[in-house]
Length: 120
Figure 1: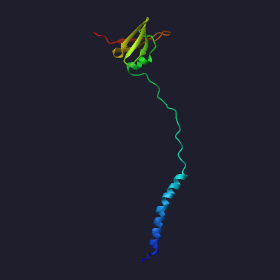
Figure 2 (figure 1 turned 90 degrees about the vertical axis):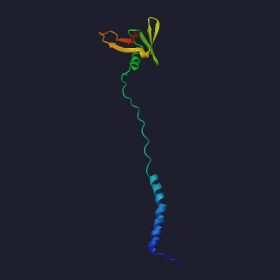
Figure 3 (figure 1 turned 90 degrees about the horizontal axis):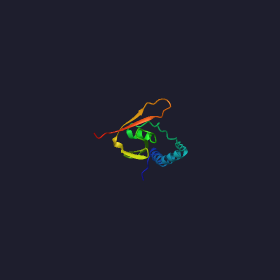
């Protein structure tokens, strides 16, 4: 039988204890730390809406107002609907060329002029 010096036995015992106790110590340490607080729900902040930079967005913003063609009733996917003296006028959105907001005197209603592409 071979006998080992005491320093070698101590090294083996110390290594065995480290292997066994290190995972247990790590688990205990995890249990001791409190869980992080849940994130607080903050209300969603949206930037203020700006007037769109394309003609469709501008037409949507003036929906229901009087124009030179009639009252702008509806802006749908690819067409615009106006009501004028009992008639319903539908134009393709792609033919709208200009939307003008004309200056008005004090007390007057805002004047809106809409021009379409001509087939000349």
